[in-house]
Picture 1 (cartoon, helix red, strand yellow):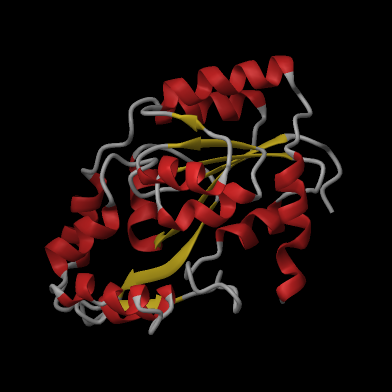
Picture 2 (tube, one colour):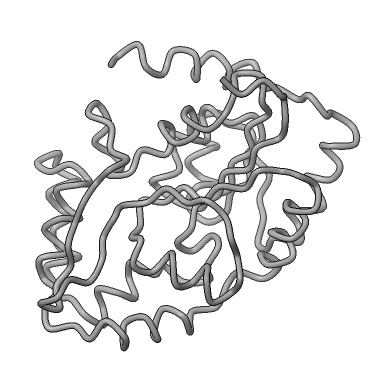
Length: 239
């Protein structure tokens, strides 16, 4: 049990930390069209997210691991993220990447940019045959929306008294924003927050996130959102 109450920062990776969706980059360069069309099975509730990802990964073959890594390392980060990382480090704010993406691109992108922070993601790596090996160590049985459950990662690494800050942009972020006290959203996540009645701060870069978060720390150092607390408390009653 973590006893000290702090602001804990959880951040999506694809198209949030990075400018582009690296999942998309991977399959457009090394996969087949079926990697994208398989998600129709998810939309019709025939497959879970994990099943879609596993089937998409089967479309990748004959990959040169070094060439793939060079492609990933060239991907730009969203404006202000390196400075935001340094700010969190200096202020003692734990920053954790929570992603339904792949370890094979998150790890080299973070390393290339000298960002040393914990991440939760699907363990997907290039194997000796040039395909992708697939493991889902962070899945949750009752959750079909993500192969790597972001809510579970938050629950595992935070205390009930902590102020949970969540930063994201898309579908896999819909569940974690409901248990977060402070939400930063962009792109389609803004519409989803409005649909679900989740208060949020829109952002385009991490300079904006940093400025707003600094004000929270000064004005509301122990901020909690009552609705988020209740949703978080009830999260695992279905388990």
